[in-house]
Amino acid sequence: EVQLVESGEGLVQPGSSMKLSCVASGFTFSNYGMNWIRQAPKKGLEWIALIYYDSSSKYYADSVKGRFTISRDNSKNTLYLEMNSLRSEDTAMYYCAKGGTFDYWGQGVMVTVSS
Amino acid sequence: DVVMTQTPVSLSVSLGGQVSISCRSSQSLVHNNGNTYLSWYLQKPGQSPQLLIYKVSNRFSGISDRFSGSGSGTDFTLKISRVEPDDLGVYYCGQGTQYPRTFGGGTKLELK
Image 1 (cartoon, rainbow over the protein chains, first blue to last red):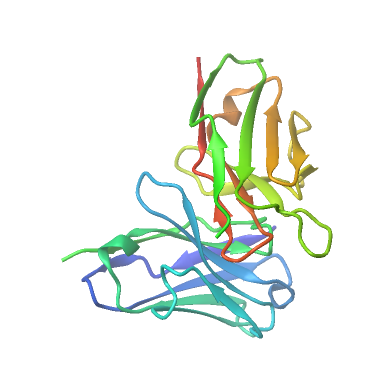
Image 2: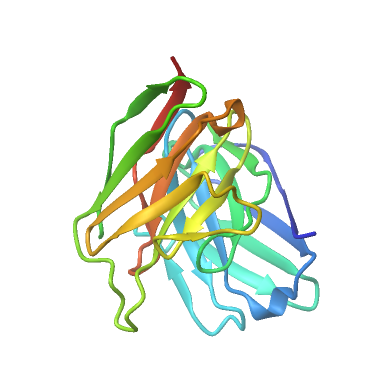
């Protein structure tokens, strides 16, 4: 059974940093690209980053480019999202999602940016 | 960026009924490789989104044949027949042809 479990939820002040993790199981993690997708409260879905299976390419939404970094450790079956210079508008539920079609999603973690 | 426009924003349906949701993209979703990367997702209340349909018309593993996708180019439709209580929630279309990946604004399916 495919499972994606995010962690790193929390409340932080504007301008600070935070790192999310997503541990994968039930599939060969090193064979798939992985994504981070977020959903602000009561809003729709926003894709924010993708990393290729071998980390050779990374893509970002303009809203996070230069502030967020996606990375992965295939030896640990883990996906990461390093978030810097956080803003109030980054407040959202953050999901990791597998592959090009987002065929599996984690349960999500809530990131709240507020003073 | 490819803008995805879903209509309607909300939909009321009777159990056992049929509904259609439209999704239009601002640019063709036909990839250079000939594939069209248009997917449909359902987010049930309090849950993460789940994949229903990929590449326009392919049902994901375990998805009922009551769900069907169609369309081409910039115009796509999701049809749900014999609506069941477990079908209620917000439906999103999403494109995987260009970066950044983008989603429609969502269609909320409610009981009449």
